[in-house]
Amino acid sequence: MRFRITRTSASREDQPHPRAVPGDPLDIYPWTIEVASLEDLLSLYDGEMIVNPDNGRPSIELYDDYRE
Picture 1 (cartoon, rainbow, N blue to C red):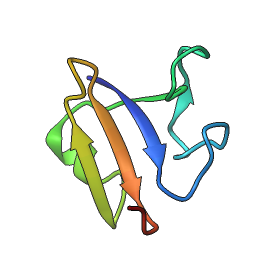
Picture 2: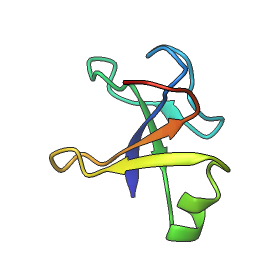
Picture 3: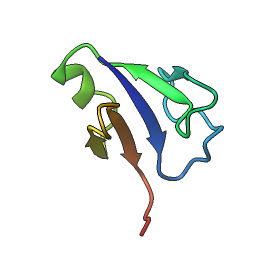
Picture 4: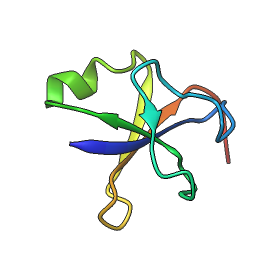
């Protein structure tokens, strides 16, 4: 399954994860990542992640910094 991916501490242009690949450049989240299984998802990041269905376009946020 393909997810949009971001990192809390990074700007939109910064690659949020080594496996992330460029997605739609016009999208607000221009990086995507392919996740094959739940185990694969859980192995992406050792910290907290926010996984959101986001109106049918699933997204992952690697939560590595505080935000309001």
